[in-house]
Length: 234
Ligand SMILES: Nc1ncnc2c1ncn2[C@@H]1O[C@H](COP(=O)(O)OP(=O)(O)OP(=O)(O)O)[C@@H](O)[C@H]1O
Ligand SMILES: [Mg+2]
Image (cartoon, rainbow, N blue to C red; front, side, top):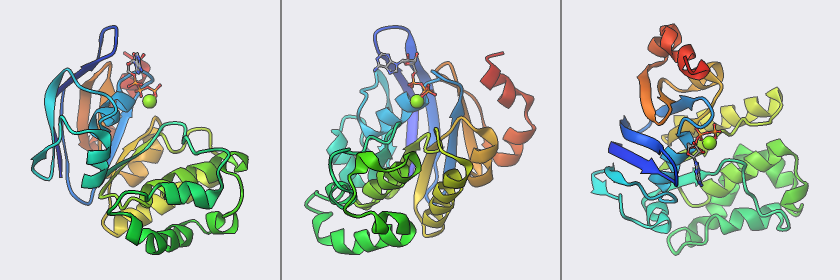
């Protein structure tokens, strides 16, 4: 579904990504693992178009999307749940959700998708009029995911959805992701928690200082001593 070849990216300093190539199959959950600063967010920001790579090519279902604007990629179905959730704090839960579906294509689908989001996260339905900034961290994460779903994603990318959440909320969020995946949604999941990621992702990629250190199935990554070494920067 997604194919990345030789992706290289930098900000002001050294390379944040160096010659990264990977494939994402339709219908899978791929875990993107790695220590702080290893380039995980940079990689999905390149896929969503928020960061412009220095070199490399990204294609989605056969179309070259390397030079497309972020909103054009959303139209293809590439949707990101950003690091730190970034809901609009003064707006209500409902308003935040509706804002996720404002494109021309998404508008007519809004009532149906709203129902699907509320079925997935009943807590959001209960809190429809509440200002998003007053939700708990876990509820905000549900809202950020719900907002992304309103645009009808085909590839959903999540940047550390478990960050700062209690184990109960992590469970709720990950169960919801598994449910979405079971219905056919392809997911690229950034996480620092190896055990958690491999409980849901059948395949994973470990980034280390901007390059892919290890890539493989859940079983391979679990057994490979380099997986843990990559985290410790050994
Ligand atoms: N907007 C930016 N401006 C300058 N440098 C940046 C920017 N964003 C990221 N970087 C640098 O790029 C490198 C990779 O950062 P990135 O955010 O992709 O890592 P990450 O794996 O997502 O880390 P974390 O787990 O802390 O979120 C780091 O050295 C970081 O300092
Ligand atoms: Mg990050």
